[in-house]
Image (cartoon, rainbow, N blue to C red; front, side):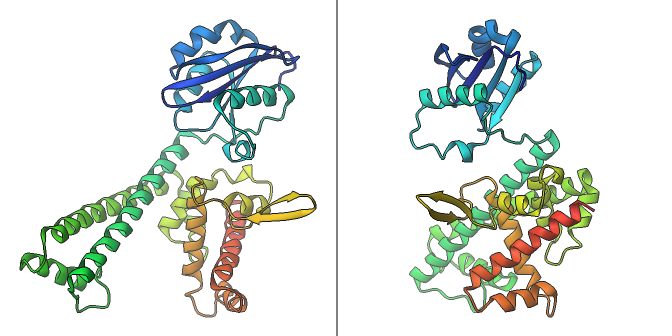
Length: 330
C-alpha cells in the first residue's frame, strides 16, 4: 500500500448499476452513490481522485471491463476475495461499498488472485465443459424416469452404453413411446456432442499452453488429461501457495474451521464456490487412483474405508492434492 494514497474508492459492482464510496485516509466519507456499471460513467464521477487513489471491488463476472479501464488510466485496483467478504453478518450495497473503502484504508482488504488471460480462458473452458456435464446428467435422469413411467425396459446393464443407446434409438424409431422421449433423446445427443467437443478443446488448450505442467500432473496415479486440465486451470501458478496445507484449504479438501465462544465449527468448501471444480477434479482423481490394485493410494483408501466411504475418498483426495503441490514445485 502506498502511504501517499489520499483517497480510497470502493465499488460494489452489479450488472446494471454500481455503488461507489470514496473515503480519505482519516476515514471521512467524501462521496457515495450509484451509477451505471460502465467505466465511462464511473470515470466521469471519480476522475478527480485518480491522481492519488486505490480502487477496490468484489470479484464478480462484471468487474473485468472496469478493472481494465482503471488500469489503462494508471489507477491501482484491488479485487476482494468474495468468500471472506461474505463472512460479514449484515450486507447491502451501501454497506458493502463503505466496508470495502474502510478495508482499503486500513490495509485489511482481503485481496483476490487475478489469473492471467491464458488461465482465465482455460477456466472459462472448464466452466462451460462442466455445465455440459451437468446438463448431460440431468438429461440421463429424465430419460430414465420417462422409460420407467412408460414401463419400457432396455435389455442392457446401462441405458447409456453403446448397446443401450442403440436399443433406445430403436424404441423411438418404432414409435413405442411418445414424442417426449424422442425430444429428450435428441437433447441428450446434442449435449453429449457439446460435452465431447468442449472436453477435447479444453485438453488441447491445456496441452498447448501449459505442456510441462500438463504432463507432470499425469505422472500422478488417478490423474489423466482431463483432470490435469481442470487442476492447472485452478492452481496455476503454484508459487502462490506457500505450502501444501494452503493448497489443501484452497481446494476445499479439508474443513475450514471457525471459532466462536471457544467452540470450533468446520465445513467443506461450498458446492457453489468457483473452486468446487478443483475439488471435483481431485475427488475424480481419488476415485481413479483407488482402482489401481496395491498402489499406495489404494491401500491408503482401504485403511480409511472402515470409516465412511466419502471420508475415505476425501482423505485420498487430500493425498492427491499434496502430490499435485509436490509435482508442480519440482
